[in-house]
Image 1 (tube, each protein chain N blue to C red):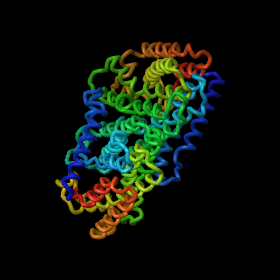
Image 2: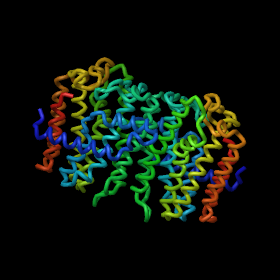
Image 3: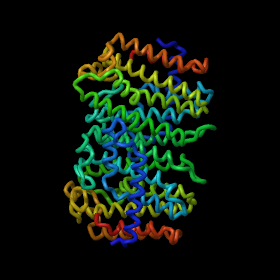
Image 4: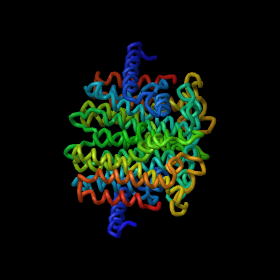
Length: 298
Length: 298
């Protein structure tokens, strides 16, 4: 269980992030109103805001300000949200439920869900454009980091490998599973962390350490996601539980077994925590987030 | 008919643009190969490269170099290509034919077509990231221009209005039609031109003039597109002709009549040409492109 202090911290960050998103996304009265309604429906669906919180905590670990990290922090959430909207489409994972609510295409229809996802990706880049340059990093640096993460080598590449894996009769190997999740999950977590650190003028050494942190945390996060799909129920999860097993999907529990998966999550979390050592007390929040993700129930 | 000199000019620009796209897109041997194959299938489908050529010609009009304008020029083509891939999807316009070839979802399936479009949008922004800063403009300036154009207020907004219009029993008004096409077509043409000009350190006055040029050219382009859908055949057009009329779509010929539409295209083209006057001979290619678009047969 997270401490009350940490819960207060998370709550404050969620408010800050939601306020920034609300202030900088077009209102749902802006024409064409339907698309802005659809964009906001998915953005304000009660997500944990993990990626933006990581960005803020990484800025803190490098001695920077939250203020400077807010735009890229929110950009990673917008990118994440768009990827969920498209992943849920009938032609992809065909999911009707997300964060306890009907998915975008169920509410707005397939065409508008595709377009809302497209517009959210563009908006994510618009947020990157509004990030203040640091002393060592320009908007061009932020943009390169973000665009590579969003593209066919990372986020989209991971989704393609995932879809290809689902088409196989046999389970994937552990290495093949890692190849999917380092692209599909770990890359965006790492980019969130790196962008937050860049706004705080992180040194090359700090960026390397935070990349190691993000990579291992990202894989741990996915292992736990897979475990929860087996052990939690739909109400707790806010999305359809047990779905992976029903479609014989290659997951960590399916490949490693449930107990071994839990140990793998612990091992990866420990690796991520070790990378934080050089930051000392400044990385307290990053460290608490890693513990929190390992112990979460949804 | 375009002069031989102008045809040679167009051919040279297409080669330059195709070479740059080929050099900077991931090869189709890059893993996951299927997504890169799908991206390249749509990018190298024999498009006219109108948007990138306009960017290069705008840089020329402002005394800049082609070299500096190449990345944003190609970025606009990647954005255009992604929008076509998504527009053609079954949930959207449901088109099987594009530039004389089966559309992406027909060849690769719907899931991969969605993802290829997504990845092409990300790649477009990656090209913006690689654009050299000018003296008066930074990558942040390019990025703001491009992200706004790609988002819910312009490109996506136009597509949403277009889809909403198709759902109406009655034809749209001329003003409603303009509201669609200034977002869906004119915005990206204008952004292509403005980005090319920005790499050439255009003055505020030059950018204003080129914005007027692009806006009117963009609307003229759409009027002619609508006219050709009525008067040309599928083989010439490379996409299904007569489709607008078959679905009772609001088009310029449907609203203004065929002859009036031709006159409207001429009137808009004249407005665009008038905006080029301050540039003198340096805008010769921009002017030739405007004449060429008015007289084109596909």
